[in-house]
Length: 440
Ligand SMILES: [Zn+2]
Image (tube, rainbow, N blue to C red):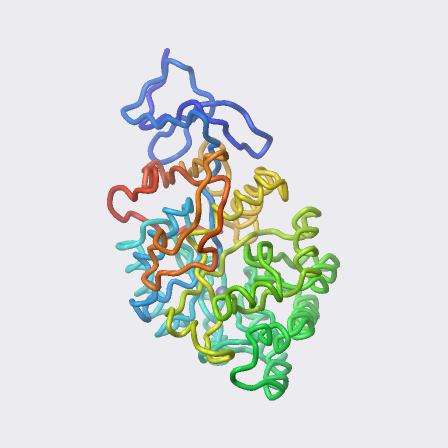
């Protein structure tokens, strides 16, 4: 007897956890109901995936959507629209907004707001401060919370927890994996005096040197080991940390940013000036090569964009007055697909990094895998499509990308979230219906 579904994705190549197969996918009630249903199955909605790869919905676990904050830079509606145009089904949003997400009231406001106006699903980070440590155990279990975020260095708000005593107190509060920005704040401040306004943009990587990041990670790993608290080191940027973290795989996971896999110093500062300035900095070729080695050997768990938009006028300021942070949520998937086409990683490793990886690190429930019963989240990609990334494609209000002018091979053709087509052929469809992601 032919089965009936709400949607059938027909004729694609599915990237399953156990390999690629040519198969249709049947969707019912927003979930994957069948992989390889009978060919005479019916559904009111048929999505053709002929010539396309059907990936589990790709996730960006590291964005700053600046909401609440400055709508001229980014908002949740614009940032999540950028996400679905870029082939993402979910983003995990950082707490350093204005005001910051650091207590029950600010979190409750954001939870309600996100589910009214987000185009994709969202996870929410809650920031640790020196004064909210007693509340963290409760905050980390709230609906939609992916993790507590600790800025152990390099924060502009009250959200800095830079000293060992307070870091240990944070680690002893609660039990879920904690996400860290790891740069040693004391060394950053001490080295700041070595530079002056108007120095070359490449000074950014000299100021925030390898030891700033490596020292930060050594300190965090010592405390994590002592407290047995699981850690996730965001945006690892040095060969030294990647080697070091191999001895902490029982308690630590790590993230790599697409920028550190795509650009290197000094070229990035020569060509992009302030539009190449981010934290931790883009470093020289030795670290770029180590980053790819760590993708190949499995050291890296997830890939993120660290989408952190700023006004164009601010990025044009001389160093170090130009704020650190780059747009990236819309370009993450195209740039990664281009790396796949260039042979730098396999499509299945990309899916591991952008689906299974975030699911494992943050304990996501029901996403990150093409399997029966999981959310019907899909990113349909055309590995043969050739495009050029340009600023006018970017829907973030700030309107620029560090990848302007980059030719890429591979493009997201459709984004499907819980059985709803929200993007097809570069058009956003329907109305915002994003939900908070469920975490264990
Ligand atoms: Zn960030």
